[in-house]
Image 1 (tube, rainbow, N blue to C red):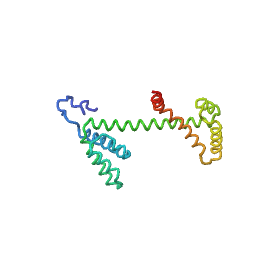
Image 2 (image 1 turned 135 degrees about the vertical axis):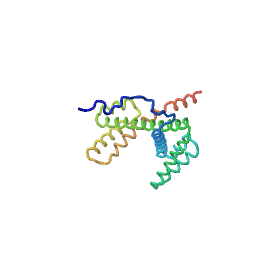
Image 3 (image 1 turned 45 degrees about the vertical axis):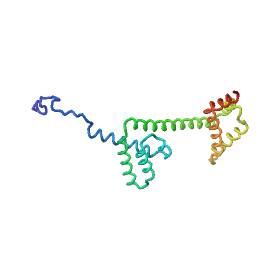
Image 4 (image 1 turned 60 degrees about the horizontal axis):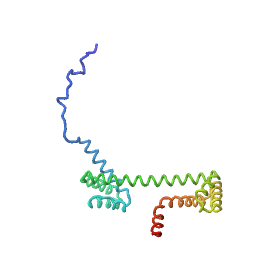
Amino acid sequence: MPNPNRGSCGFQSTEFEQEYERPSKSELKRQMTALQKLGAELIAEPRDRVKRVPMPEDVRDAILECQLIKDHEGRRRQLQYVGKKMRSLEEHELAAIQKMLDSWKGASKSETAALHAIERKRDKLLADDKALTVLLEQNPQLEAQHLRTLIRNARKEQAENKPPKAYRELFQILKSLQAPAAQPTDDEDDVEEDQS
């Protein structure tokens, strides 16, 4: 018969557990790795973007230097140096850098979403003739005959597996329709200034 007391001491207390005022070694390492990843994100960005990020000159120089290094081991050491420099930054400086990186990601996501919407509109034009009628009603400045020719040629290209010349041209026309929609306020301001 097993002993019921075996494995249990019968004494449980937090009296002997140590309490630390500083972060654990593992937590410090996690923080260092996070800062090094932030530096790696900056290194992956184009040089002109990195130059616009608000940060001390020595950190910026270390990042720009790392972008130039092609050797694997040299780049790895420089990346660790960038991480060390990032640890010297204040909390508000790190927040500003992170905010800038997040804004870049958001801008590129919105651009990608807009391009996907244009692609869907193009595919709808190729699939349904009624979509062309709707597009022409919304944009009377477009040449109906030219669009019909492009749609017919794009369908033919797809059927014969030819290079998508008309398909791309149709995309560019739809993209040009989106561009003026983003800038109507500039034109209105010019008109108001001319009338004054």
